[in-house]
Length: 134
Length: 70
Image 1 (tube, rainbow over the protein chains, first blue to last red):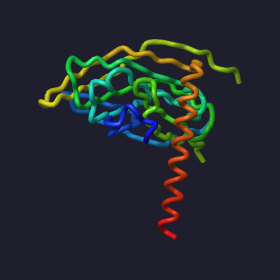
Image 2 (image 1 turned 135 degrees about the horizontal axis):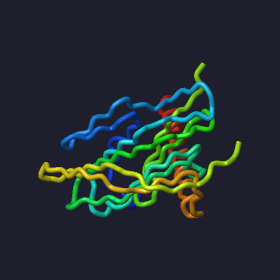
Image 3 (image 1 turned 30 degrees about the horizontal axis):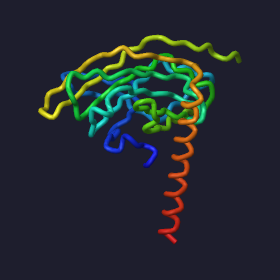
Image 4 (image 1 turned 135 degrees about the vertical axis):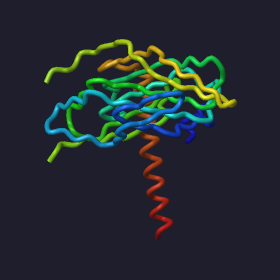
């Protein structure tokens, strides 16, 4: 997509929403991945979720700010936005990151947009379905 | 229902960097968590544009699939 310029070479190989992302000796284990949540009533609070990202074909030009934002709809501002600056000691070619989101409040059921951002530009969007339990 | 208050606080983000020679580096960095905060007009425009581009791409893919199956 032309909109992704200047990130043409960068790939987001995995974007996973899970209960836990556990790192040990450079290897990650994802526990309880999901794309759908169900609650009895709204507003509903999810105690914890993690967003795990694997970027490949990384170049130095890509490596600075990475962020995830949870939107009721992408056209509106995120109600939770986590950002950070990468700090590698050398020039990596793959980059993994895990963001922990606590006490996430879903005010109503619907399709939520989880935006992955690189250098303040939206890079990819993951849909999270939130439903009312029948 | 009252509107939630904007809050900003630090957060920890874990990262692993993998190098060409097979070595790796795992670090925990301090990031920023913003809740219910407004965004700049430029950022709001980026969100809208990405959403529009995404919807356009999906529509075009669906139309192409329909044409190919016809």
